[in-house]
Length: 210
Image (cartoon, rainbow, N blue to C red; front, side, top):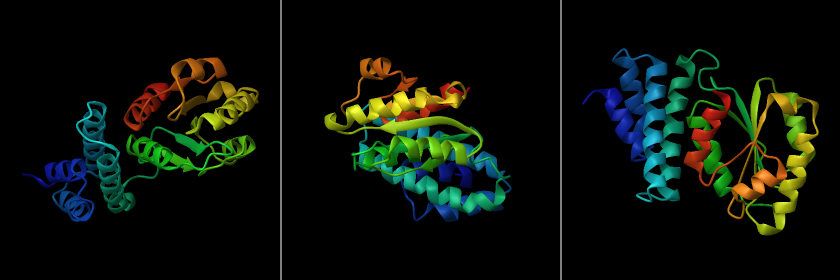
């Protein structure tokens, strides 16, 4: 097996400790850094598909995403600036009053592994902070907001309404998600996209900027 095939396998099964050496080996074999990055993105795509089919669950996805992150760290010096975030920037955060971050972190990792640069605002993010982050960063394509509690759904609604009132609204897409959120609610509050899980979120993000 070539080193680049090994990278694919190690990422897909989440062997974070072994990935850096395999990535270095693939570079030493003469593979382009971008080719190795794309191999890891493909591996995460397969992981996402398995997740959708309920063949694996959140812990396995987190482990694979962490393994990919280790690989990206090795590649960073070899990638021309911006390749890792070639699809643009995504601002992500859990809305005001909500302190849940596992789902949001998973979405952030999956979106990053799909070739975006992710600006993670963390949890309990006031609506104004999303706008501040947009103004502070060039090249933002998507703002993703999550609410994990039925009690914070109004905060999500407020955040989206606030974003919808901004001058820059036409140049970004707003994605929403979280356990209690539905497509109907996303449509009602004026979001551009809703997905049920992290793998779909990464896929949807790519479609939105295509």
